[in-house]
Length: 313
Image (cartoon, rainbow, N blue to C red):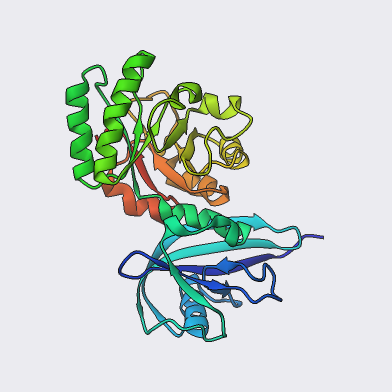
């Protein structure tokens, strides 16, 4: 017998300090005792926006003034199939209170313990921690001074996640460049991910690792611990499923549009990108021929944000 999918509107309600409001589930409920993001099931014929506003009013006594899509999560709990439609609520009217007696807490996303939340909610935590703009470094890593100046300029413009892509460098040169890039990111409050062999990356200071499509399928387990980011380049449903199976934090899905770096690749287009991202079990960045002007379009099609070389370098 086919199980009915339960469609849930959930909210990441943010305060002025960037903290997110969470509530504790009743002990006797499904996933009882765990923390969750407020929300509830859509009623028949109800739009997502109306459901979100109604649920937050009933649970917390607040009204939604401004919200934007964050992530959609399909999760099979065995006894039920959940679709979590999560929006970030950046503005609201009223003072949140637990109108159903539920304890509340304001937490910084970096302080959230994923083990204290239901399994379906854990990708939400990752999405809250990841920024909207993801820079993949461009030319020319063989000229370190010019390369680092361009990277510093991107950080000044607000980039907070950088993948060090320096093809052609020998290991020692890559390690030296990565060390300088790490220092730049540390000073800017940004994170540096290494696009390198995991064995080499183990001895280089960084905040995580990015896997090529080849490495994604060659590895049989996540190559970094929970304290370091790890993502992968993906081009298909199978790639996205593999990234989720390895417990990775994010995926780059490409190419959305035609690109100069990979002119032979057939673009996904926004409609197909949205289909693939909707079924992914982790945050997905849109990549390929994009820049900051495409950010709203990307988010509207289910992306965490945009990743770019030329558009951000």
